Image (cartoon, one colour):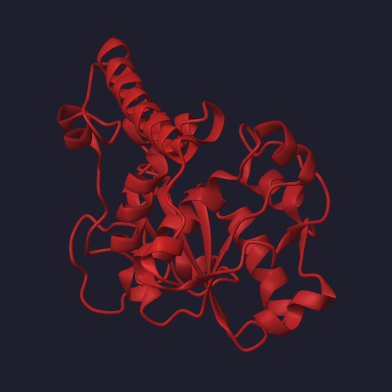
Length: 269
């Protein structure tokens, strides 16, 4: 087509582009105004904070878990007992999963972060928490095939609108390159909240609560799976999930959480 026959931009198209540009500027200005008027507050101390949702002072209060720890359960040791020595808990009650790792101890600040993500729609915390988890679980992630978040029952998922474990798993998947399979594991019956239950009751509460649908078993078979959750307390939920995945012929199941409860009244060694 020659130059004379080329269609010329209409006045309407010029106006449309101008309106879009003005709209974009207006939206950016509105966001900036909201950031100034409603600054992000630290989820723990409620002081204004820029960026991640946790101020430097509260970040410093988090107890990050680092070696030495039990190679099986990831429970921190008070001193280095030497290579490959397991904790008493790992020897006395070995779980169905192979290894567990956590980013931090479940203390006051960690509890606030977990509750904000889980119950207060603070999904903006997931990227930071997920990055810390990816760092803590690097050893597991290097050999993993799949990330599977601990599922919610559909009723609880509907009331919360999102699965906090799934939000964390998405971040870890982006950080590590390990594929996420969010629908592979299902909670097949509703359970009580684990909060306040004894160790024995926790195990009974989640027994038989998880399963893998027949059409998803091929996705699991022979794969090294990492189960992702926010908190590891007694390990009952992780154990029940691991058993369901192993019944579906997973080659191995490891567990990666943001925080784990450390019983200071029980000797880890």
